[in-house]
Image 1 (cartoon, one colour):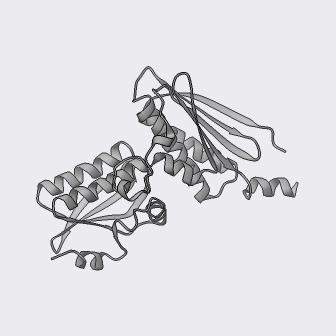
Image 2: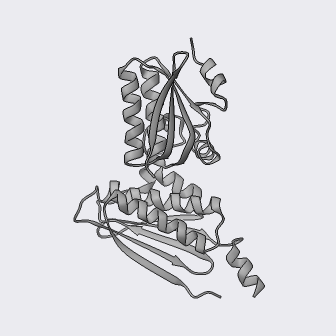
Image 3: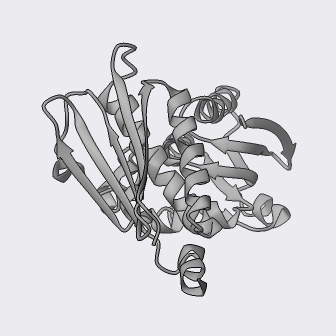
Length: 149
Length: 115
């Protein structure tokens, strides 16, 4: 049984932070034993959540920061991303698959997070929004390693 | 890796060979500027070759949709060529695969434009 591991970062509201977070997610998912397709999905969900925080939440404000953390419990990879923006109501985001929204230029980020993760949670903070992305590790190499020891 | 776009002409169709990542920032801007430039020159039959596009995020998807509607609104046609599995899957789950006219063969794609 692996002890929970958690790493946290406080990042600037820049496109560079979005790219860095995506790379880190891919590396951490690889270390957790996820296959290439799953890793790609996780890193894309993290990228989309970071875009949400940097672009829609903090609006590239140089004073505002994004908090990013990765926690691996042995059963799950939990990614938490929070911004210091105005906040939003996830239920009010239009369904990007509805025929009238298909040709809209934006509005697919949350849909993609939900498509690639097992669970996506939103929490309004006093200042900003926190998104929690959860991917379960069943069926990955981690299970095989534990089963063989 | 940033994105590159180069254009060539075959039978009145402009083929845009894209490579790299179409993502928020530079990648999306390169695609937007390329389409804008072609439309300003009256080149309205556009085939986007995505064979060397390694990654697209939601912003990149939005840019493809925007390119499609801009070209169509000007009376032109935009088709997609050589989707990688990753991009194909992404267009499937976002229900855009049926919106775009997607081709696997360049000659067939060029022939499918209204001449």
